[in-house]
Image 1 (cartoon, rainbow, N blue to C red):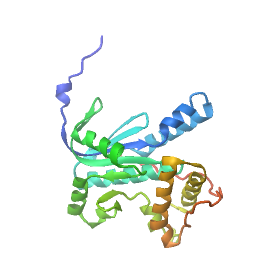
Image 2: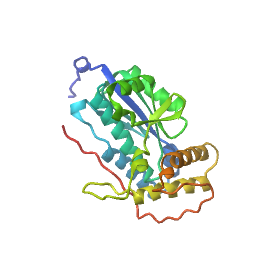
Image 3: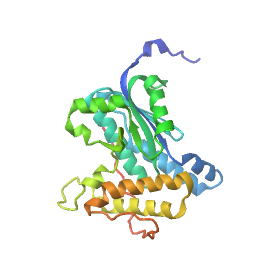
Length: 260
């Protein structure tokens, strides 16, 4: 005999940060993997990477829901919550790029319920709209109220955002490459030489083979890399027609396992 759930007792509609994230190209990969076991293994590996990268953090009310190629992450609307959601988006984007998977999303602040049974609210709808209707490039766009909150918290929060065009800010997911120096090497430092080369190789491959809107996303990523990362001279620039060197030694990924 099934037990009825008292949904009224789980009314937790609060002011939250909500990110709606989409794995670009996933639907096409699902179709191509319909009769190809090797491609289905790759899909499971990518979904496993999402699961192992993200985590729930009770201290800031971080919650996570995944379905197909979509991910909803939310936290309490506090400075600590925003820091954790920025870091989660950054690390997830970093990890997916190691497998040539692009991420697009929208991050907003507003009312939402995010429980184990339901995810709903004006913030959830607005985050989805920001991702699906306005974030044409492989970026996680942020809403104006998130920008306003960043300005009130402190200067370090502003380093998480970068401008795509006037008054269009997104989570600066190439920040760690832009700030990377090969020396000094210290305990716990993530060595980015191989992962950086891997990103260059994947973008070159896309520039040489993709067409249409898919090519446009690769061109945008190339321009972002050259403008923000290559300019510092640690990593090379990406140019159309460059051969794919394939010299990286495999993917480098970072995990978040936090229990508060």
